Every structure is written in structure tokens, then in C-alpha cells.
Length: 283
Image (cartoon, rainbow, N blue to C red):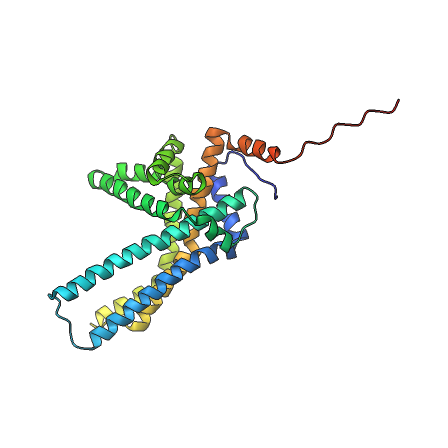
């Protein structure tokens, strides 16, 4: 087993450890993120080709029940597929971070194996957290941000502690008590990083889209395809960072509040045979 460094960390140390873990195991985290996002990319390309093929033929009756039903079912299908794929990716990533953080070897396959049984719970957390923070945002923005910060480690709780959606959210509220400010800074930094990378990758798309609008032309199929690929790369390259940081913050809070480092050390020593007593000295 590799050396396990379990100690309270500052926010800066959590971020440093996040990027160190990501850099040292780049292939692992990109591999985990690539599989579900590749499925979504293929699905989006299928919808794009179908839409273009339909548009090139006879114009559909936009008011017909069949067309409206198809649009609604397609939108619902996209949302469901997205939730499932994000749930799989997050559960597998947290499983990988947990193994690496505790000094265990892992792989893409082992991470997906560790995610089994947690995917539906993660999806439930995403839905309930989205509803809760959305309702809070409707009334005031600040309570919504605060609630999002308090629920930020719900998914790591569900994967590591095998709790249900509601219990995981309650546990996250307990762990993040008095640490909402740190969680806000962590989420803000991850959001800014994701936004910057997305803008850099999508800049050519914005340029061609503006040019097409000025010329009153439809955006070309190639530009649209590039935008999908750019979004795929953004999700694969940057997406894991937020999940890694949330998992590390979860363990950091447990070390600070519950002495998880001592608990883990005692559990590890419990599996190691005690050394033999010194032999009596010769008379």
C-alpha cells in the first residue's frame, strides 16, 4: 500500500492536491470521463444528422401532434441520458479518487466497478439538489448559492458511505457546517476554470456563428460538429477536476471533524500482525 497522507488541509492544499492527483493520473480520469461523454457525443451527432436530413426534405408541420410529441420525447430523452451519463462519470471518478487517496491502486475498469450500485443514488441527488437550489434561487440568489455550497459533498458521501439521496444530502449539510465559505471559493474556482477552457475551445464556433448571422446564413454542419467536439473535449479535460476537488474536500472535512485520519490508521493497523515480542536476553 502506498503512503497515505491523511491530515487537515487548507483550501489551497486541497486545490494543489486536486491538480497533483489529476496530473499524476491524467489517463485514468480522462478515461473515466471520456466513456460516458463519448456516448453523449454520438447521441448528439445522431440528432444533428437527423435534424439536417429532415430540414433538407419537406418542411414538417410544426403544429402537428406527432412533431410536437417527437420534440418533447427527444428533449426528455436527452435530459435522462445526460443525467445517467453524468451520474456514471461522477460515481466512477469519486471511486477512483477514494482509492488513490487511501493509497490503493485502481484503474478505469475498477472505478466503474466501484460505481455500481451508486448511479441511481447520484442521479437522485442531482435531481433533488437541483430542485432545492433552484427553488432557493427563485426567492433570492444568495440562499441558492449557500445551499449549493452546503450540498456540494453529497455525491462523495453517497459513494463512500453508501447512503441514499436524502441521507447523503443531510450528511453533506452536517459536514459543510462552518465551511460554506471554503466550499464557495472551491466551486467558484472550478467554475471559472471550466468557463475559461470552454470559451477557448468554443471561440472559433462563436466567430463563425457571428459571421453566419451577419451574412444571414445557417451555421454550417462542420461548425456545429466542431462545437460538439469542443464541448466533449471540455467535459473530458476539465470535468473531472470539480469532482476530484469535491471528493478531496469530503475527506478533508471528515479528517477535520471526525478524526478520519486516526480512524483509518487504526483500521489499517488492525489488519497488520503485531510484531513478535523481543526474545529474552541470554543469561
